[in-house]
Length: 201
Image (cartoon, rainbow, N blue to C red; front, side, top):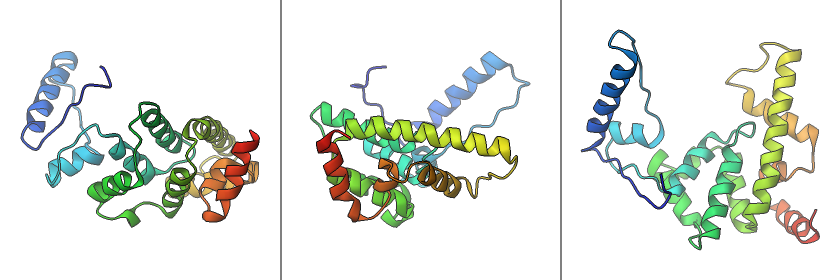
């Protein structure tokens, strides 16, 4: 599907598409095979509240990734990838658009984890999205590998409740000077990141 195509789910048409999805599932799996469809993010908001249409607008994808903010998955590098693509296409996203998307989806900017708020504010001030994307992708992969190693060494120690905190601590211990760690800190990092980009380091 071309990224130029724009499709919009509305309160009026989403039920039709869900029914068609159900028919196709039954056709392929048989009527006796149970299934559960869980709607999350914008689709859930649309079904339950209906105060906005669900689009493929990138700022809403950014809002959802920031809400998760997992540095052991691709949440933060995805944010940078989206920003870099928009910059390349000559349609850069603004902080105002991202704030609006967060508020539309979650009701309040402060619904984002503090680390995600600081991350996006620092990223938008520093730009250089493509270079940051490559660096953050490497760091997310390293953090994921550290989590896997920790779980192998101490089975059951990682839970949904503590995984983000453990990931952050592991990542910082592995490389206290990492870009990701600094992008999640307050404004004192701005000059360091800018200087590093100028020197190519």
